[in-house]
Image (cartoon, rainbow, N blue to C red; front, side):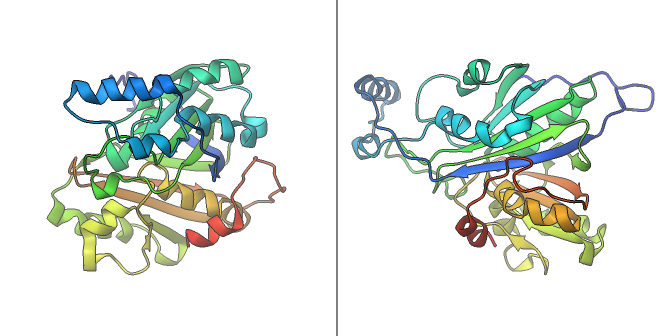
Length: 305
């Protein structure tokens, strides 16, 4: 992966803009498609190159590809889906079909900018994407889309680490816009020894007012803290390594916009040994039904609580 960071100005920032969140959209429950005969050939040859066998049961079960997920959620962006300066795809599991799904945006969005993907960063993909988005916003990017993509098809019989297993096909999109009201404060992921993770999370919480913040801990952070998980922390369940913690944000988005809320999100990837966090200040204000294209099934919202 190539990372470019804008040249800082004299005050340490290259531009005046903060990263701001305009909308959150999510889709689950998308119907699976069958694999085509050429897909069977492709995956058999691909895994055979590494001395592995393609899982025939997995192929027979069908798939919801990253392109399917992106296509399904774009209509929910409504007024925010007509243009972007940057779009980032973050994933923890590999796609279920060959190719790069972000190319689909070129035909689906009238005015497109730069697109790229963040992969092989486990539970920290979206946190990394937001950190990169903040740097890009300093170079006058006004609208940035961050896609968190989870697809559940496993096309080989090798073990998958528990924290990277996908239980449900899901896409969550964060729409970042310079004119939005809700400030996002990402941080670059950084190494933390496993035995210091709980203390690091507690230190972050100590800087917040307990009654004024909702603290969301991803599954890697929950596992690392164990019985030392600070009281009041909302433990996000495993099963959606890319989108899980952001699914809670999607489920609560309308309510938090009505009342206002400070949200602190964090996770820890045990394979990378890195900790990541992000704070979002959701400003209170009137919410028009469907104004941001936010779509979350009521059962989904209840499940995430």
